Image (cartoon, rainbow over all chains, first blue to last red; front, side):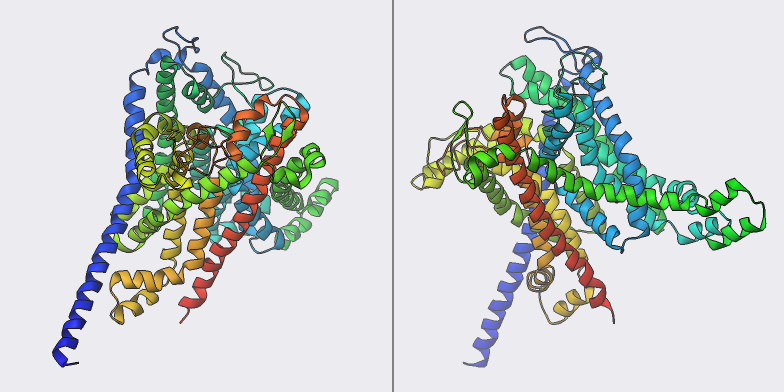
Amino acid sequence: MSRSTRWRSGSVRYAWRKLTNAGMLSLTGLAAFLAVVPLVWIVVYVASQGARFVSADFFTKLPTPVGVPGGGIANALGGTAILVGIACTISIPIGVLTAFYVADKPDTPLGLAVRFGTDVLSGVPSIVVGIFAYTVVVLPMKRFSALSGGLALAIIMLPTVIRATEEMLKLVPNDLREASLALGAPEWKTSLAVMLPAALNGVITGVMLGVARVAGETAPLLFTSFGNPFWSARLDQPIASLPHTLFVYAISPYKDWHAKAWATALVLMALVLSLNIIARAWTMIRQARLGG
Amino acid sequence: MSVTIQAHRLGRSGWADALARRMEHGDILFRWLLVAVAGGVLLLVAAVGYELWINSALPRAQFGVWFLTTTTWDPVAREFGALPFILGTLITSLLALLLAIPVSLGIAIFLSELAPPWLSTLLGFLVELLAAVPSVVYGLWGLFVFVPIVVRPVAEALNQTLGFTALFAGPVFGPSRLAASLILAIMILPTISAVSRDVFRAVPSSQREAALALGATKWEMISQVLVPYGLSGILGAVILGLGRALGETMAVTMVIGNNLDLTPSLLHPGYTMASIIANEFAEATYDLYLQSLIEIGLVLFVGTLFLNLIARFLVWQVARRVPQEVRP
């Protein structure tokens, strides 16, 4: 083979390598663009369809039967608030205390096991958590209840709270802790009165993300809190919720209920996405400030 | 700790102080409280498995292992077999994975290697929002927008070109296994891409620089160095995505058509484990029926548990390996 052909074949190969490079790199950019399409599509579509039906009445009135115009989702809003309230009441104290243990003793057998258990728990399908809540609350009480739904949501929320708190506790400077101990404060007081306030931002963002996740959960509520066309605030009775109401409207065969489904979706999306955006923006700003 | 105790010993004495001392001013109590709560979280995972197990004794006694391998699901005749649902879940999840893996890896590579920081932050943020959209909203959008506009034309095209194979046999339905797979693919994109982005970011830059210094193009560096280096982590990310797909309920229930169709056609409506539970649990009228559904939940729990154990192990391995390799 002469020198010039070898050079030329080398140059063809080089051109080919450059072409592959450019092609594959643009494909990765395309993939990133592709991922944004469904998000924008969903948000825009839900907003445009939902906005037609959302009014002040929609937030303050009870649902109306098929064919009766008007009506709202006041009971579902209240129900979701109650369910999320129960979930927070259960999962925040347990999550924060667990995070204290895990952040303090990450390498003990129990610490490792709990960290692993938290990861596993976050992977358990929400509908399975719903079955668990059904067997421990609904079966003994013999009726669907807000309490069982709240319990299911609490379990789903728990890993998020634990992990967010743990991450923040790890970032609290050790000096703070040592200063408090040196002043003679017992360990529990140091944890609750010094460490926790220092990590509070992270705990709050963690809770917000957890709330955003469980506020949209439908599967575990199908057979725990069930649903309720009327106003109810009793913990031992079935209760309405935004996602469940949305589901019932969506799979119904009625056109006017479909319109309400889109409006409910708009309310739910606004709630969930704004919680997410606030929590993540807050985290980013704080990290930027710490970094700078 | 001992300093505080001694300071107290020098001062007052008495019954209350003696107790406080013994409790190290409540610290022992606090420590045991933490152990109890942390242990409780661990027990919770076990309790979920235990409750599912004891509440599915009836179908286990009646059908045994055959519960998993028979195809009859007939509440009227009191006969229950879970095979159609297990297959439905596996088919839709694996197809979703197949569709999501290339796109997710593309996103991860773009975010960690190519995009400038501001674009990477923004896109990462948007992808995280994609994960935050509630499942039931995906279902609503899927049912009324995505299935008629995207899935049906795709299904018809597939049927016309590949209709002779069993996989794409007609007739064409809107709600179908294909529709469920496509929705699932969108829903697991954020999981796979976020975890593999973190895996790529954990690869030491010395590896990148070495490849580039040897004359590799950026793509050769990515495909021949970065991907092999992070392979077990990527595998972990994929398995995490699979775990999410297996347990995903609402969106799938709303677009899969909920039909005990036993043909292998992707264009036909089907059923998954999660969607049969969602559809029939609240209406299960007698114990064997209810417990059969709980046993399906148990299968789902055990399956996702194993997948998660494997995935976490793989991801942890990459995370653990990194500090040793960057050490000079």
